[in-house]
Image: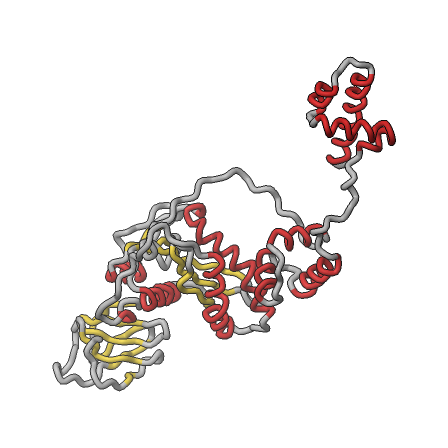
Length: 392
């Protein structure tokens, strides 16, 4: 039985008792009104109705009438058909964003959600658990960034990894792209995009993936004395690398990935995108700006902790660097490749010299002797002619 009907029956029974007391003179009109919690004028009106119609006269006459503010049935059905026809597996919030942007919808989010729930096309969410206090955000953008990867079926077919680099202070995603498999190079690309677009930041919060940290024993603390290539590169840039020791510690980025998993595959499918290159263009040009408009928040304080990156070649820091010793044939061996050092005006040869091989994200190579670039090579190890071999 509905709550409204129960309350009406209680009102009828209580009124009958009070009305009888007033009729026999046991209660005054003022006392009877107080007993019912109404004014004397309302008690007199109820008394007239009760005398004329009996208990039915006490019913609220608004019950059963359609509200003047109720949306037309045609509008509700059109909304339901739109959702079921094109957005059936979307979340209500995601659908609502497109309902406003693409279909010029004028109703509020609550109306859309409740209308779809009333039609039975959307299941009501379970009640959330106990509230847990969130970690305070950093007060300024650039103080701490998060970087993480999520493996998911972003495109139809085999799963791939989405790499996101986002700000802790605002939840703004500065870089996001799909890649076959997360690793050192993908992490370099995310950091490089942030530095080129905004400048150097103070710290980066990451999980304990093997490309970020060396962890001698599973589940144990990371070994900061043996830095990975990524850790070494950030140290050269003056950026602190912070390790997370639980999924809850990365809750902000985990919630972000949940939103991306609910939205991005559906938008890519709606746009007919099937290749990773097309998907990355869509993310950069449309999805990422829209995501930041919807989900980024203002920083607690005004200003920015980003500082400009001045001087040096960023790509030669954010790359793999491996030390080598030049062989007697004036060549360097690197991953089944033989890198021939070309003639140099400064030295006749570099036999037995300590050099450094740089491998970049596009698989090309370079050979450095101290700060000087001796040569650059294709991914197949073929030397690339250059006008100057001095490091930029």
